[in-house]
Length: 451
Image 1: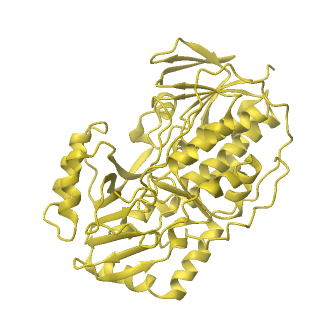
Image 2: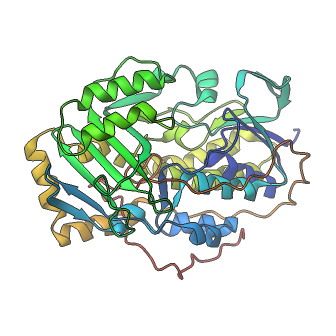
Image 3: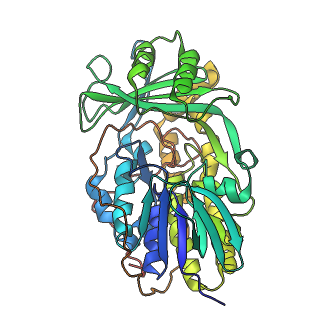
């Protein structure tokens, strides 16, 4: 049986570069295709929590790099329309053990995967045709090529999943809420630009409006909106439609909501999506498999960042155990990861109702319960169990030779971040026990044999 050697990965955000790193270290030749023209800088904060996450980062050799660029997390305060505090959540509730900007994390993973990975930016897969010996792939721009294996690491709205497993409607479930975030000019009456202030949020039943100041640029802030709604019909790629939906959903609310809505006119970095979850009955079909949110993810609160890092480690390891038998490797990978990923994903089901409780009673219960230190401590402690998985160890293979890559190394600048959105990370709002107590920066995860 011929050994699988070349692997095409769709998606260059988190799970894709992490998988490329591990595959290259185990002798494969990975290629990553990414629709965006370059790595995206800045973005929302994402976090890692628990020994499993930290151990994988340590085995990758990037744990210290991430500690050097971590945000440190930030506290969150819910207020009434007059800015009187109703609930204060400490930084460790939202920030986990390590919190970094998504763009900074993506850049670290990208650098770690070089030079043995080929990157194709500004392109996407248009068709996948499996043959007995490989997968014939056509691209929007690049010429057709054949790969031994294809992996979809392209998120909740996965293109690979659509092409190989069926339409998104078969695998993605709307969870009853929508979320949006964007940056805007800051001023003292909007949000004080102090590192100790953190984020501030205002609720009415079924709606949340939040704002936080940038840690690196006091003239900038980030807005975050969540609202309850049945599934809407709109163009997912039309920012104008997104802005119209937000204005309708939040029209007439007090606090600072009017100012936030007015700033939408100049927002060129708006993120808007439903809070949804992906459930795929089988994570592989033939020579094609899924990893990260594409297989088992949630828009917010499903711990997808940490799960994607762990899944990339396991998938590459299982492929290295049987490089001539991808079906067996895919089956072992799914058997190991599915219970873990589904356990993490469950917290995403409760993110919307926690961020924006649907009734005044629900708001009072959330604020009252989490104001009790004993309940807050229990929530922090319980989260560590969710993120724990006994990690397999894998023999180290000769690393792949450097690829004649067409990509260019990029130094990305840190931009405005918000502690509100947690797409692909544990929600700071979840009462399901997804948060964990933070550890001192000096504490290292136990070094793994794959280091």
